[in-house]
Image (tube, rainbow, N blue to C red; front, side, top):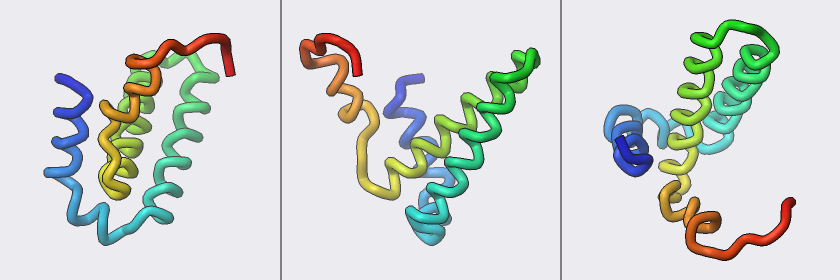
Length: 87
């Protein structure tokens, strides 16, 4: 599955509810998932780590959908330009 397909899947399945929840509340859910990923990364349970990576990505797609951002296009920042050095 391509990133755009996954983002569209999230939009189709959860879009109406996500828009009702709004950006601020959704961002808090996203941060909670990032915290769960941090905890998972501190442990040895690879299955849990995989699950938390999926959750973080799904909530990132949700935020992008609410804000009208195509993640694939946003990633062109890294794939279309000559990036030099590190941040």
